[in-house]
Amino acid sequence: MPYMLISTQIRLEVGPTFVGDGESDKELMARLRANPSRQLGNEFVAMGSTALYLAQKSVQRKVRNFPHYIESLEIVAAHDRAKDALGPPIKVGSVDLADRRHNFVGKTTSMLRIPVTGTISGGYMDVMAVRDDQSKPFVAAKIRLILDDAAIVIYDTGNWKDSGAEKASES
Image (cartoon, rainbow, N blue to C red; front, top):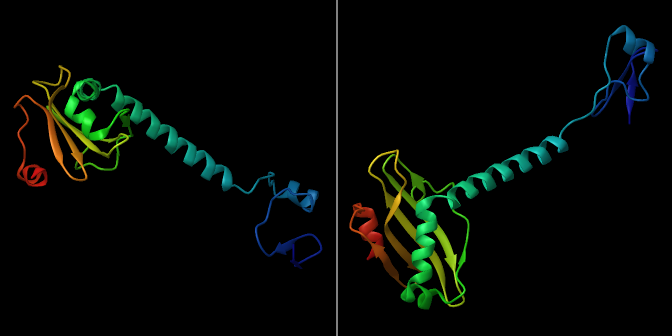
């Protein structure tokens, strides 16, 4: 590594420097009370990326344990028109946690947009759920399968109140 000699004991290096490396003056380092250190960077990127990945997987696991998520998969598995439109076997993807317009859990309402694919087609399954109060679990109120060429209402109890934007996207 190129360096400039400032005095007989201290050198100014060009580029990243390491305190306490093999080329450091041991007496000077002891006098300055400098501790050996390492250049950090890649370790933090790897650890940070791993932490984000594990956090996302943890949230996905929690979403998949929601009662209305499980209930919706059971309803779709038993629905002949949905099976015919998608084609068996039906595979379920991960909920997009960044999409807060289609994936949210409120105090009394919840909506999940779950990616689904089959051998014939693929799309999304919108699961809308309601509950009377926060102490009770969510119950699926409406399940809509959105494919490239059609939108199929699979299940509807009438308890979900559609907004104008949802009605427009359905037609």
